[in-house]
Structure formats: C-alpha cells, structure tokens
Image (tube, rainbow, N blue to C red):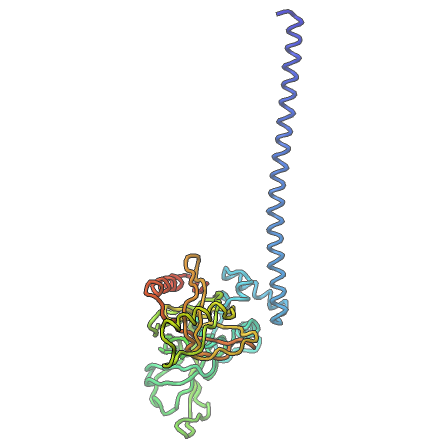
Length: 386
C-alpha cells in the first residue's frame, strides 16, 4: 500500500473512533437523564401520597376536635402497633390493636386517674366516634362494653351463677353489681379469675376470662324485685379478645362495604295476586324503584344489616320487600338479591336508618356461594371485613 493510502486509511479510522466515542457519551447522558427522571417521578409520587395522607389526618383532626398533641400520641401508638395512622383514626380494629398495645404496660385499676393513659385513650375513643358503638357491632374488646350490657357471672369464689348488667366501664376496667346476700361466705379475692358470659341481643354471646381488680362492698343499694337491696361492686380487668359464640343458623361477619337497595314493595299479605301477576309486578317495580346507597354492617347467608341514608325517601317499614346488590370480594358480586325487612330502627346518625333484612327466594347455589364468601371473610386474619 502506498504511503498516501496508508495516511488516508489512518485518518478514516481515527474519524470512526471519534464518532463512536461521541455516540457512547451521548447514550450515557440519555441513560442518566432517564434514570434521573424516573427517580424524580418516584420521589414526587411518594411526596404527593405523603401530602395527601397529612391532609387527610389534618381534616380528621379538625372534624373530631383532636389537638396536635392527640394526633402526635396517636401517631406514636399507631407506629408501635404497625398500623397506618389514618387507619387507627378511622377503623375500629386498628384503633383497638394500637390502644391495647399502648395500655399493655400500664397497671389496670378500677378508677384511672384523670390524666392517666387510660383516660387519654378513652378521650380518643369518644372523639373518633368509637364509643358508643352500634349494638350490632362485634365486640373486639371488653373496653367496648357500655353500661347496661347483660353479663352472666359463673361461680367464682363462692359466688353462685348470677345474671347482672355492666354498671361502669373505662379503659382499665368494667364493673357489675351483685347483691351482698349472694355468696355471703365468698372467697372471691382480688386477682382471682372470673368466667363471664356477655350477652348482646343484637350481636352474639361472648365468653371472657377476666381477673378481679377490686371488690367494693359499700356501694349502697340497688332496686331488685321491687325492693332496694344492698349490693357490692366487682371490678374486672379487660379482655382484649373475648370469645364470640355463634348463635345464629348462619355465620355472620362484620363488613364495611357499599350496598345498593331498591324498594320493590310493601309486605306480602295473604290476599296477594297470583304468582305470575306478582312476578310481573315485582319486575316492573324493580325497574322503576329508586336506588338507595347504604353501608353494610354485617352479612350472612341468611341476610344482612345495613345503615341506609334515607335522603327524603322516608323510613322503610318492617316487612318491606327489597332488592340488594353488594360485593364481598373481587370474586363475590351479588346482584339484586330479594330480601324482606325483618327489623328497622334508628341508625348511627341523623337521617340514617339501621335495617336488618332476610333473604327470600334465594337459590341454593347462590346461598352456597354467599356462605362461601362469608366464610372467607371470617377467616381473614385482620377481622376488619372488607
């Protein structure tokens, strides 16, 4: 190869090397820019989520009247239980878990001091709307008891089986009154274990083993059988997991989801039209009936209960016929199930009605599918429903 050809070839090769180097640097710059853009996008997304959470916490604090010190305390106990602060402020189960963990290191007493942790938790419970709870709610802790709840006390230290009611409740203890004449030679002492059955007519029956905190014999008198009788008051430490006994034909679980209701008609009577005419009328009424959106309270294969804002539609009477649509999980949609109102009363707020319904004309396959969905909900570890 001639010298001139060698020179030209070396120039061409040098140019190629420079050109390759430029593209490599450009590629690296583009990759760096893309990585920076992704990182910035992720950071911005997290910032927006944190901001949205903080905004909601501020709104919840303002609506419930909580002070910054209350929110700060809730944040600490929420972190200690591994629950998000918003969940602790808005859902009962996370609130109970967080407060139970916070109270575990405190010494339970019959009457907590004014500024104790117990009284602080009681203040938060009331402010967040977790006391008093609707009568149909499951009992997650005996701290949710209210004065007047029915209690059966099994034999304890010479005190025979006795039915009574709750007379005091705070975050450290609850108490019942018993006649002094019952078990006069009682050996019940502070620290002994008592077996209680708590009966909630609108919910279920709960068994609970609790320790006696104190026994006060100078509680005056209480009315019984038309006469005033001397009583003593027994204080018990709380049980954070009372055993619920299912006393219905179908297992019922507490849920917190949406339900859509159509009012088909009034209660059926013995003078109803023939079945064909009734079916036609029902289909027409269903198509034209107004739609009401409510919130599920609990559900079973036999029926459900819900809180239904009436929004000017008037109260729904017992015996009314409805069609209910709801979803229990991603694979359990139930549409237009026929139901009859078995009980109707005041709901948790103004303009809200609490309604219990029983499913009617439910096919066996559909009832089995509903029962399976309820069972899956019952087995969820959180126990929070949907």
